[in-house]
Image (cartoon, rainbow, N blue to C red; front, side):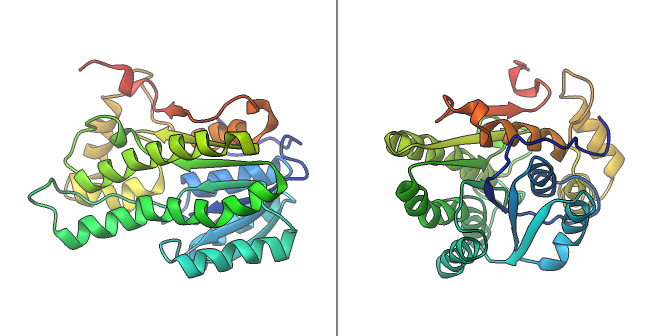
Length: 272
């Protein structure tokens, strides 16, 4: 896969909120890749992150490609901030056609080892954030009679993926079921809700955070362990998540709702 996306008109005329559009380092995180690809597909992107500095590379890539983007700082675990964020998008672009939730992160620890406050923080970051963005975007989408919501879960939400991270796993499983329930409720109103389930991607977060949690900072060891689980024999990155999101955001997926696209190189299809 090349390091650049191809221009298209698959989202021409659409307005997309992309949360978690920043990244902890240089390269293709999920949110960055989604924001860039959507802009190159013709969408007006309302790029959201808690840290505007984390979006610098995202914004530069979009602008270099001639795309349209507006950055916005928001803590998506805070209901008032999320409501203001949706209002700001409407004030800027007039509507919201697409909502993509990419905010999230893991914390190591099983039911005994994980501190209660870390469990609560994981639920807030990974699940409450999705609930709040849906809560504040859905009335607008309902009023216009259309919309596509794409939530990012994880293979940790559907199976054991190599380490005890009980709050992360539970919250990502919650994202999947929240999406299914919301999809069925809002299908008669023209709104589709789906989930992308990435697994074992090589994103900047691997080097910056996961290696410290899993292998004492040994990045090569972590990559070797992750790669061994993947039948395709290579690790994807945020661009693979972005291409799945593009399909779900576009009219090509008009008959797709309440389901998941697993992006993991075949890992969860293995029985071992």
